[in-house]
Length: 375
Image (cartoon, rainbow, N blue to C red):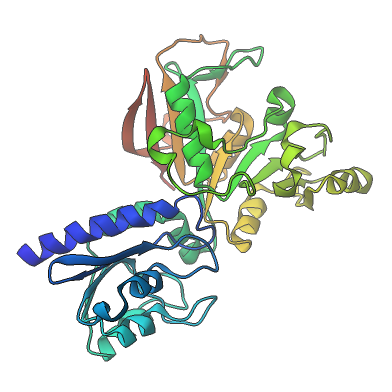
């Protein structure tokens, strides 16, 4: 029991290290590594960017010859294959590590237990599964994509306490206060893609960019590349109505317009701005939303944030494309004529949709309700 408590202490620190890569690891998992010898931390590192050394390699480089006989605390099973980087399991073996303690197994088919096998076959003791739930939270999108080939899809919504998102006129600025809006920047920053609908673009002329100076204070010290690289902004626009002057195209290189329209002239006009246009129609002549999510999985997007009006949010909920809800709730009443949270038809109590709340968090005068969508 004493050993388990000590292992958890060091793994908690490794998880905090891993979280430093929250905004920069891209398609890769967020991983931290701590090397401990004779009760002393001799090296600590985290994976920062795709193509750069993994956490274990960086920690071993710091420790040098002192790594022999040390225990490695790693938040994810060490890789066993040659990718952009050599196998971390081999590096730990060659360094003379005596024990490896891990939070999560790696579901990547190229690893999936093979890292453990390499370590054990080399005589290294392996302990896995400690603080696994914390590791799941850190890499939920990566794990989900490895299991399903789909990204983890969150839908962010801001509502009044009576469940309204905008006045009947469309007026919606601002339902929630600054702390809640600041927190949205965090969820944007950790997402590989942000989805919105054409109605939101036309009504708000939104950019949907991450503004690092507006992040909550605790996240402002994290590394990021937002000045050069923003999350992919995905605009669902069945009829290709988006104006070329829309502010979202100010960072056009990271804009994907998904349409059901074959208007090649308009597509070329948007592509000339630097945007990408993809035609994905469904049988009703609208955009195939499921195909959009599947496509984002093929380009290795781990986490998606949906920021839209009730029509698109309702369609994605009804088509079972949402995994999680982020419902920012303000202590105001907007009235029955105002617009609802979701535009979705449910006429029988037996057909109501259930969600599973996983977090309630106060943000100034507002609350954040995080919930999993039961499917």
